[in-house]
Length: 515
Image 1 (cartoon, one colour):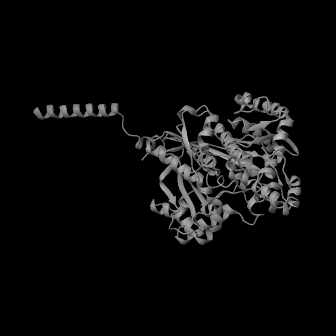
Image 2 (tube, rainbow, N blue to C red):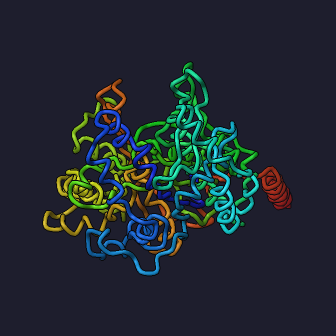
Image 3 (cartoon, rainbow, N blue to C red):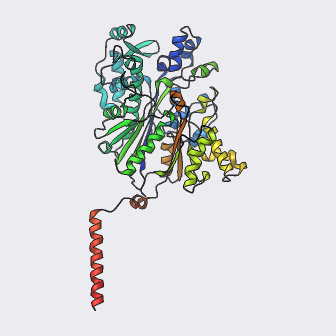
């Protein structure tokens, strides 16, 4: 059987300190319900500088400048000590500052909704000109708008402002006079997820070994759903991202599943390639402005920085087996079905134990598990604990229960089979997929045999069902060209040669028989 492979992965972060206050759901709700909020007044004192965000060890790990093993030996909390010599650009992508991101939102806007002030536009143009993947897009920023025109749009509630501190540097206009689904606030959300997805995809295809004209399908799996009053979640962010990134030969669609969405999308991409429908599929997701500062009240209350100050994004390229890159085992799939129940044990039995048992594998046969990979610096002050470690302990407990692990080895299981959380709490971003970049590198270097991506989601958030959700897939080191060729089929020319050889053998046999 020939399995599809993960050819490349990219990861990006966008530091958006002012969007925390103006676009994060926790903060916008606070402004509506408590306009004189002390919390809102305190936020500016708890914002990190861009240099601090770049130097944050989990962020350096996310973009590939540090390994999870290096992160694991650093003293926590990680926000107390920045990484020396940290770089905004990494092996997998980058950490983008807010001003450039406003420019990227403008670049991603095809309906003239984004207005940026003239002087600000000139500054962003200069930065784009030096950017590794955006330098060809400078002219798309236009000449900019007069500051008074932008101010008038915001003051008349026709647009939502884009700020640098107290300064208004741009705005996003509403896209319809009456449609709430096209309000200026929603358009900021939609353009932010699109623009951050564009950045992740452009880093993915910025590679001489990737031909964008060979990418046939795009699956977008963020948490936003675009549409108007007649079809609120109609989509399609996937094609809109591909349009800006230059994937002219691709079509695509959006896939939603709360936090489990990316793993659903990755399994779907693998299935499409495995079936032969498409040879090359991209899975991509941008960030959610709603999640900015989601736990900000708890962070500020404890005197911490507001650590949810970044949008997150990623892109993964799935292609036919090349005999080199890690394979997606489409025969080792975990499914949390409707009948499984929502207890943590039932969920992990469905996603980890069942698919491994079915294929004759033990939990201890898997090098690394990647469940919810949220950074514990963010979740612990909010009372949610160290989420990845909690998952590893439960997986280890299942191994003990099945007799695959001695109870005394449970503490070491967490370190040996798990990674520390290093992903932003962007909902869909942490669930499983952050491991792909590092895991692929380890496999190509011969340092890892396999890892399991585990996506879990809370469907009850949509108030349509109380069900939980989850899917998982095993990724393995490629065995080489033999595995790639095993299910590749035989060409017509090869068949002709085999038939000709068989006829020769048969003729020789008849000759010998006559003699």
